[in-house]
Image (cartoon, rainbow, N blue to C red; front, side, top):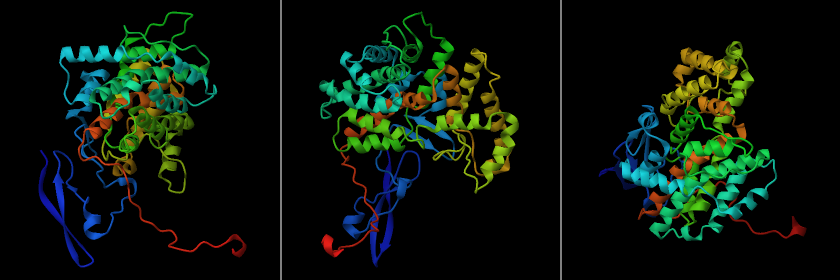
Length: 431
């Protein structure tokens, strides 16, 4: 339980105010300013909300200094190596690791909800062929509320449960169909005899003209990618989902809002930017030149895939992702791939360089994930949709938590207004 016995004092305009301080189970203390405006008539100013806790949560904890990521207390490296994605989904949704009977039931429910309403095909066909898959996903996920009326009442716990399972189950099908539509191939329906990651790969890469057998190494790598991206605390897209849900919006609309936010290149598009950077560098012998450019403040070039907004040490997901990259590229016989060799040499040089060590610019999860997805055959336009498939369970877990929170209110950030003050309207002939 959190320790709420502390307090802080604020002196403003000659008056003193006592502010409660909450001590969490992990992380820094939090000064509670909810009554500050009512008592003192002032707001706090925090662009980007980097020093503001907008909610309390029991789902995910990040210690950026230690390079630690915990889901319900379990470290991500253990989950990625010992667990699998749907078990992590269960953990995020319900708070505990499932028993054998519980995970069997959960996997059955997810697997048997992977099909889409047949009429939803018309939504895909309404887009241009060159539409970005993320644009398609935003539209189709938002449209789910028009098809699944029996799971939009957020006041009904059972409908919330049904919506949660549907979103987790159907998101791979939506992403795979967005991909198939973009390349002019027929949609591939999901199968109930395949695991989550294998089903997704088959829907993306199989064609009616021949059999497709999913390689277990590729399936395991895909499952790890899903696991490593399942949730990441109160990031931009998760905060967007929470803000949308605070108004009482249905879960499909909230997740569509999260997908739209994830589409931003500063958020979900980072692994694509990293792969583009590696290809721009080209070969290992060009690295020193780009390292010097990265150090030059007057050069617009930036090393992508190094450092993180939250982690001030190693990204704990990066080590697992690097292992998967080695396994996948060895399986595909492209371990001598120039992009991979450039990535490995860039990592080595950067980690030995005092500039990067002092600034703690270590490789993050995006550094290798793009290489893996590219090796599997995914175009760069599919990198962020795959991220959305993985992150759906995190969004839903956070959404369910907020709906059940008796303290939750509609989001309404304040502002520091710097515009014009009151002035009278001037008729057009007098301007």
